[in-house]
Length: 195
Image 1 (tube, rainbow, N blue to C red):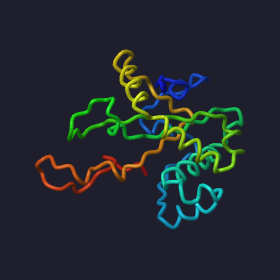
Image 2: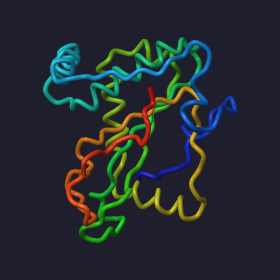
Image 3: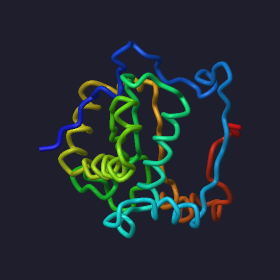
Image 4: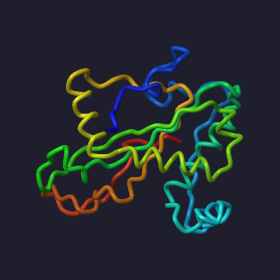
């Protein structure tokens, strides 16, 4: 049975920082930048994967693998320092939650992969894609129920910001189909620029 726990990704072994605003974590010569990856960029990334993964890896999986490794390399972490990838997985399809028909709200899980930076950077990219897939696949009905129980009983734990790379894919979240009586949506995104 898959069980959700607060896990190592929430509390850094070195007593690391807790997540606040993104500005708190941009220090020294660190800069914030946006990068746009189109279909041709993703196709090039997929071509670099082992043959068995070329046609079966999603755009999200290959981007998560490449970007997590790139972020970890850019931070120049010690090889024994933990690095974390946290993804956002839609749990609306899990019947264990008992969401009513037509429910539109926040029903997601944040599965994580935690490993030493040196181990991440030395693994073949295909192995990193497999880690992303395993994290996504870990969100089952049992996982959803376990997470719900944990949050009700213990409350929402604090998320550590130490060496954390979070990635989500909002392309299919459904904002384009939501109508609160004001007409079709015009924009969905960050309330302010993070650049």
